Amino acid sequence: MRSRNTALDHIKAVACLLIVCHHLVFYGPMADVLQPYLPGLMAWLDEYARMTVQVFLVVGGYWAAAALAPQGIAKDLPFLPTLSKRFVRLSLPYSAALVIAIIVNELVREMGFEHDSVSATPTWDSVIAHMLLLHSIAGYESLSAGVWYVAIDFQLYALCLLWLYWCKHQRYWSGLGQVGIVVATALSLCLWNRNSDWDIWALYFFGAYGLGMMAWWSVHSAQRQQRLLWVAMIAVLGATALWLDWRDRIALAVASAGVLVLLPYLRWPTALRHWPLQPLTWIGQRSYSIFLIHFPVCLLVNASVHSLWPGDVLANCLGVVAAVLLSIAAGGVLHAWTERGSISWPKLQRWQLGLVMTGLMAGALQSI
Image 1 (tube, rainbow, N blue to C red):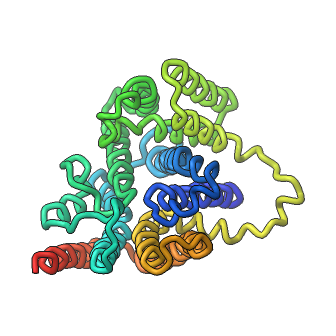
Image 2 (image 1 turned 135 degrees about the horizontal axis):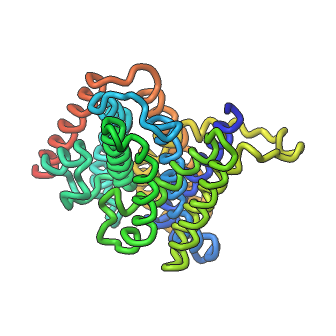
């Protein structure tokens, strides 16, 4: 299990770094300076690197199945405390990262940096909506890139918890938990995910999440026939969805689920076993914090380099490298602050209070 978890850390690390690079390319302007010299790489990072969020969705579903129903039947978990624990775990680093994002946005605005990547000064209601993970549903501009994912992750977990909990407590329905997950996965892959109007709701993303849950059950089913049945269902659902409407993101989700299924059986070549992969393990274990904090870090580096060396190719190239390295370092600090040690409501409430006060101060300073 330990080696499998390490491999998952490596997968998350690569996906996280690709998302950081995608945002650097998409939100320039350092990447704009480099684009004429690396057009192919920039185009690939712009178009395809963003899709690696599917990897996080699949891995999220994999671990959700492990936490909620490792053998297919829901564990005997109290509904509200379990949901509350998930909210706190997601929101603690998220709230801290938003505090940093608001401060950086106002700082670069004062520096005279005018760019589409600079968010509008938050209002009190937009801050509250972000705190409650309702910003996308309520139609507010995001205070930082990628915060939509946190809301979707919570929706997905809550939906699965509610369904599995309900099935567990029904006399004749306790065994239908997995059936409901498979049906929802099929509907999402073949129907809901084909309509972008749904992309603020969990149902749009449930296909990738459900594939991750099915991958867990495939790996951990007791009987060989059950394992093969889960593999067959993943393959059939993925093939059907792509036959109906080819989507690169869904192809990546299906491939990611396949990798999770194969991980226990993979035997790495001897040469690869001696590679120094500890940095990837470290990044993977902190990938959530890096994902949350990287955008304000990249925004600050972009603004600084653009103001000092706007057209210098070498300076902008070094700036991109610095932005990635500083994002990793900042993610490590955020992880130490918010994901290690005690994770509790009082700790979250302190950060939420800081978020509200930071938002109000930013609004007050902007109005002066």
